[in-house]
Image 1 (tube, rainbow, N blue to C red):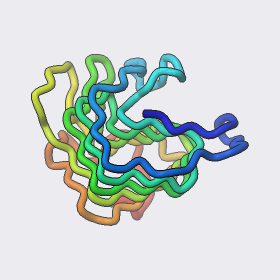
Image 2: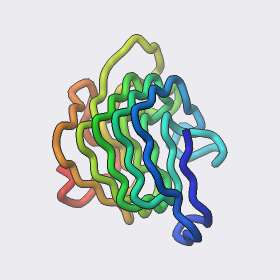
Image 3: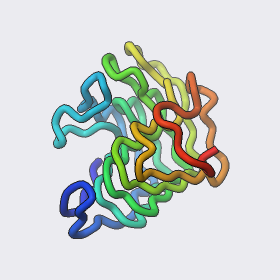
Length: 167
């Protein structure tokens, strides 16, 4: 599932807005090179992928076996809210840090509520590595509002270290 506004990185023309609620999303993604960069911008890199959005609310979703992220925020996503979401077995055979949530580019601000990472039956080279992965700290912010559960992850936070109050 993709939510995409108009414009380019750092040059938004019009933001996509809306809500994604109470969905079950299975088996989407796979569009990343081993270094975590998109091999083709049209490839989906997770169950829910976002570019240039404003105030999007993700609530009550279950995302099963996405690759490599359950929720993938690329560039210029402002005031995203994620709550009551379960991600089961984010995986990849090439990218070493599949995670429940991926901040894959710059200019993202996200509020994470109850996001759970769970282990399922998926077999892969890498699985359930991170709760949240940040490719870069540049222009990204995250606030944890409680209820997240990343105990199934090898590490709760992977990649670039974001400034407080992310932990």
